[in-house]
Amino acid sequence: MTQAKNHPLEGIRVLDLGRYQAGPRCALMFARMGAEVIKIESLTGDESRKNPPVVRGQSAYWVQYNSGKKSLSINLRTDEGKEVLRDLVKESDILLQNFRPGTIEKMGFGYETLKDLNEKIIMINVSAYGQTGSYRDRVGFDPLGQALGGMMSLNGEPDGPPIRNFFPLIDRITALHGCIGALAALYERQFSGQGQTIDVSLGDTGFTVNEIPISAFLGDGIIQGKTGNGMGMDNSYQTSDGWILMAATNRKMWERCCEALGWDDWVNDPKFEGRNDRRENHKIIEERLIPWFKSKTTEEAVDYLNKFSVPIAPINDVVGASINPLIEEREMMMEVPDKIAGKIHVTGKSIKFGRTPMTVGSAPTIGEHTKQILTDILGYDESKIENLESDNIIRCD
Image 1: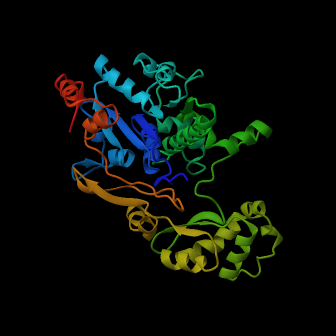
Image 2: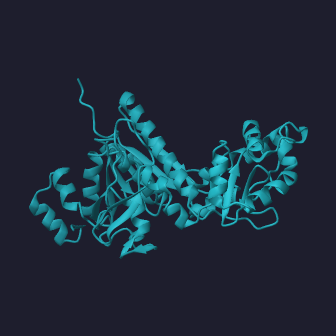
Image 3: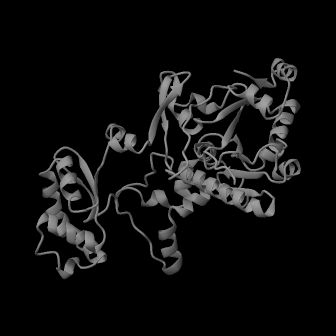
């Protein structure tokens, strides 16, 4: 009988050459699911270690994308450093990189080279616009994915300018695409015995998040306009002390809202029969909703309508979101020890497995695990490690 593993991806090793967000966030998901993720960084450390905001000397940016990983600090501009990475490729399952297309080949670690070292290796390539296509060589970041795919054109009020999301939605979804693709490749590898490449990009994700309006235009020339925060039953409303968002879009929700607010005259009114009917007559609905919400506190409105199963939530600021009980109850942000800050909150358990745990660890210092990795995985002896360190090939913390 095969003994069950403690974590879903226990025994999987990932080499993380990612930078900024999309690549490291993808590798973070593997770390949370129990894979051994080795962060490959320079002798001076990943540049995002210095990114703000800073909590007691520690970058809150850095720890969100790298907690639970091991740090191997190595100079990949040297032949000796490249030899260390080649040795690690032979002992690993996944290599992730998000340099500009062509860069990893110039470094000597293109897929054909990796495959010669380890035919089972899976390579995740994250880039701005993909490994192929006419935009391949362009530089790009999350906001450009939002712009390219049309999402920004639909954000904001109808008479306002295009607006981008504050948080990196494109990076996050691209990271998930890379993780999902690699998990599928791991499964397929069990049958073929071979690895393969995964190609995900910010540009591709920009189109996927806007897929419904694009489909409508390509299919029938329909051009989606801005709707701001919504209209009618799917809209934001000001309360006496804040704001709420209501998203009561279907017929059952309409009936429950009418019951809650005493709209007996409207529940079966043909003007509000279907979703499109309610959208067309949204101003009439808003004439009743606006004063009702203004007469209530946010807590009163949310608590009351939730009793009738009307979808509603407060529009929190950062403070409100940070003190929401779900963050602790659902372990979405968890405080971990930190060698610089003492302790710090990091991204928690976004996936809850019924039987196996997720792992939430601390962010490593530069080269914290270099010696352990070279000794335990590659079998380097003390003398070799000391020589590599004295020659500035590696850094041990």
